[in-house]
Length: 111
Image (tube, rainbow, N blue to C red):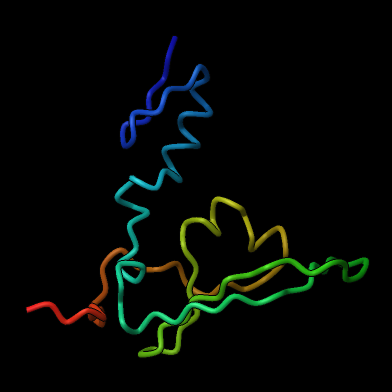
């Protein structure tokens, strides 16, 4: 039996793979963050962060930090959820980026 993603129509042989894919599919409406659509308040920084667990710290890994400059809130996208960053690295990622935002303003002033 073939299983299909209802958002992007990708095919899977196993239902559990299709379900996991749908949850994090880039075409899933629950993953279309208002912030990422050119919001002028979104600040995106690439940094290095250490990988630490209770036995010690190890190599660093690249990290993208999203901040709303209007509210000062750190945020994360669905990609961080998919990669399970918070539990894997024990970091507080802030809040999930909203799907709709009252503070949203497009950085491109199109009339």
